[in-house]
Image 1 (tube, rainbow, N blue to C red):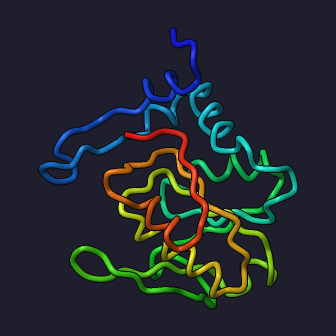
Image 2 (image 1 turned 120 degrees about the horizontal axis):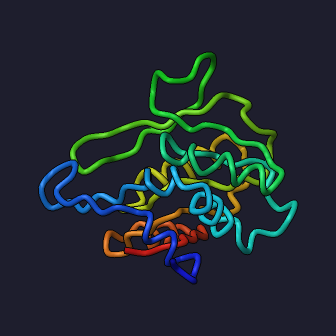
Length: 178
C-alpha cells in the first residue's frame, strides 16, 4: 500500500521498453485509468492549484488527453472541447500545422468552439518535445482564446517540452516527471 498519492500514481503507470520503436520508454497510463482511486487522484493532482472559476473551457488534446480532461472539467466546473487530428471533426474547423521530427501534422477544433476571450486550459496526458502542446496553444490563441496554461499528468523533461512552452511565455505543470 502506498502512502503518498504520487507513489500510487507512479505504481499505476507501466513503462514499456522499446515501444513503439527501439529506444523509447513508453509510459502506459492504462493501468492508472482502470484504477478508480488512481484515476481520481490523478485528476485531483492535475486540478491542484487551479483557482475556482479561472478556466472557462479545457482544450483536450487527442487522444489520451480526452481521458483525463473530462474529470478535470467536471471538477473545475468548465466546458471541454476536443482538439483532434485532421478529418476527425464534422463541420467547419480551424486548424494549425506543426512540425514533427520527420514531417508535419495538424490539429483542429470546431470554429466557434469557445467565446472570444475565453480562458482556456490545455490538457494532455504527457509532454515530451512539446510540439503538439505548442501547436494546441497556438490554435487556442488564433481562435481568440486566452491561454491560461497547460496541465499534463507526465513530463519527460529531458526532451524539453515544458521548457519550450516556458520559452514561449506559457505556464505548464505536470504531476509526475520521468
